[in-house]
Image 1: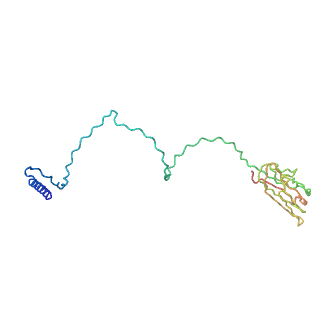
Image 2: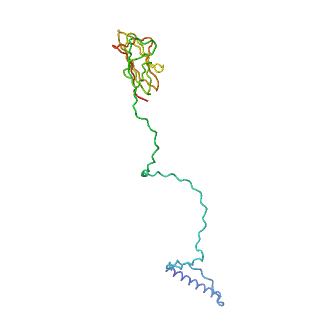
Image 3: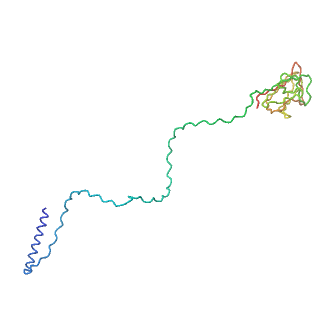
Length: 241
């Protein structure tokens, strides 16, 4: 406030001095003097009160109202994102319905246990011929007559694994060959050390149907067939195939 007072007083003095100078220089003409120096600008006034809300503007006239613009072209496909973490396993689903019955299978074989066995004894005191089939003519057991007493050979009727064994009484040296269809399976030789002794040999053999097995002599043939010491040849089926 004091500052404004100084400004006003200074302005009045300036005006008065200018008037005096003008009267002295031109008393007759009474010409106006030069304008005084402008005063210093005043401070900003206080903010006025907030005005009232104005009236809403008028809507633009349009028969169709606001319109949407045309749809733009689709943008390019972006790069694939990284694969996220696997989720936890879900709960098991409901069991499905049973399928239709299968086709009827082929009839199976009748479960009959196959049998084959024989035991025969040599019924003569004479030695068998050299390099010939040893015939056992006295039958003890012979299922289905698989052992032929005329030929001295066993013919396989049921394919499988067989066990053959012979027990011989001898007075001289003896060598026995076991053959299957002319193929040598084993050779058993015994050289007598006492007046009378016994010897034996056995073998497990696989046979197919219609194959034959027999015993045959070689150089030494001292096999007897006395009642005091029979010589016996036996065989039986272990397992059919």
